[in-house]
Length: 402
Image 1 (cartoon, rainbow, N blue to C red):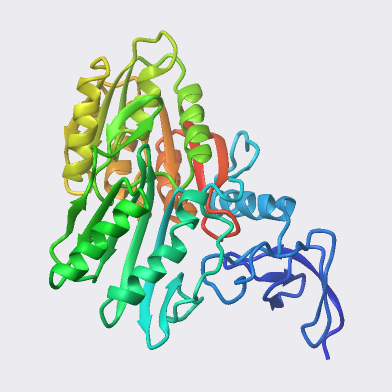
Image 2: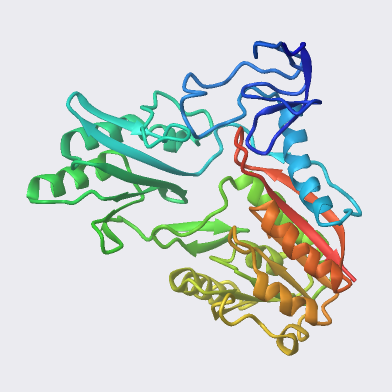
C-alpha cells in the first residue's frame, strides 16, 4: 500500500503529482494524499468558487489558490523553454486575470423535454452541464445564461446549439450556430430576444456563416484607445486586463524601434498599442490573412492617423522573406496555437535584432523559440500569463534579442 505523500507540483492537465510520480486529481502542492487517494488539504488548497466545479469542463484548477495558480502558469512556460535548452534571461511576474473578467465565451445549448440545458461541456464528454453560475465570465455575459436557456427551450432545434458571446463596446455580441430560423415565429422571437437583452449584435449561423439579424449600430471594440470594427466571430484576447499587460510589455520591449511589423495582427490588438506609444512616431505594418479582420484593421488605421498600415497576406503559405523583414527595426508575432514554423524560419534567416513573440501555446512557442535561439536570438525576457483563470490554458509574452 502506498504511504501518505505530499503533492509537489501540478501536471499539465491540472493533476497533483507526488515525488514518486503519482497523479492525483483535485490535489495541489502542499496537500497530502494517502494510499487510497484521499486528500488532506494543505495551505494552497482553496474552496472552489463555483458549484459546477469538477463536473463542468471549463475549469480544472479552482482548488488552487492564487499562489499555486501562478506557480503552475510560470512552470508551464519556463519548463517549455528549458525543454528546448533555453534559459530565459529574466522571468517576469506571472499575470493572473481576476474572476469575472472573461469577455469571450463558447457555450452550448440543448432543448430537452423539460426545457433546455445551457453551459459548457462536461470534461471529457459531450454532455452539457447546465450552468447556474460562471464566476470566470464578465457579468454582462453571465447575465445572458438564463435568457439564452429560455430562448433555446422555446425555439431551439434538435441537437446542440453553439453559442458564442463576445463583449464589445456597445454590449454583448451573440452568435448562434445550428439554430435555424424556420418561419416567422422563431425569427420574431430571436429579434425580441436581442432587443430585450440589449444585445449589440445577434448573428445566426444556419450553415453558411454568421448572418446578422440585429445590429442597432456598428459594433466596435477599442484597442489601445482606437475604435476598431468588430466583425462577427473576430478574435479578441480573453480578458482586457491581460491584453493591456501584453501590449504594455510589447511597447516597452520594442523600445525606440520606429518601423515594426506586427505579424498575425488580427484586428490590430498590438499594432495600435505600438503605434500610439509615446512620441516615437512609430509606424507599424499589420499583416493578417483573415479578410474581415484585415479590413477592420485597415479602416481603423486610416482613421487614426495613418501610423498603422495593413497588409492582407497568409503568413503560413507566404511568410515575409528575410529581405522584407530586414526593412524593419523589430518584429512582433502573435500566431495561432500551432505556432508559426514557416515565418519563424524566415525570421531566423533575417538580420532582425529584436522579436517579441506572444503565444497561447507554450509547446509550439518553445519549438519556434529554439529556431530563433539557434539563429543567435537569445530569450531575454519571458512573461507567463494566465488569462484563462482556473484553466490549464497558459499564455506568454517573450522577447528575443541578438
